Length: 142
Image (cartoon, rainbow, N blue to C red; front, top):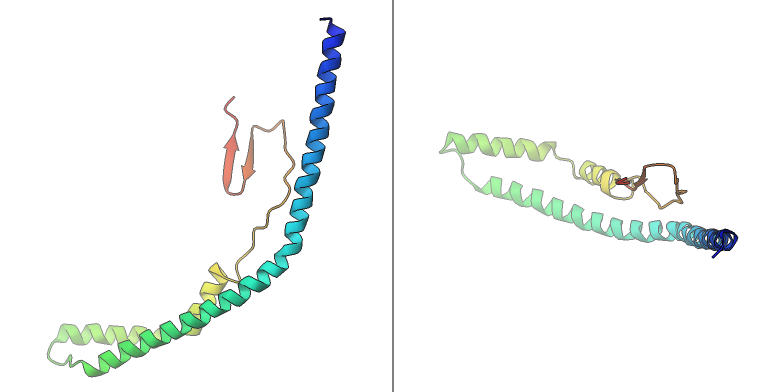
């Protein structure tokens, strides 16, 4: 086989690889665009579900606080100073607790208020020795 034949074959392989790369990039970008269009619907649906969970959590927390307060009202702790001190601490904790603030803090950290990390297209850098994928870093082992 001559060097011109092998060069032609290599050029054909390169052209095919570039065409495959462009086709794959195009499909990938198209899918990301489809995902972007679905983001708002996803946010709306998850917000409804999250609010249902928050409502149930509020009921659960209110029931818990009410139960503990009822329990503290019925228990006679006057006979033991350690119990009196413990129960006073519990009552103080319950009086400081605000259900609405707790629910809002949770929503901001884990729910509807948290930052979204939507997929984006990242151009491959063939010269770099590493690339970030989400929170992972992948390194070449050259």
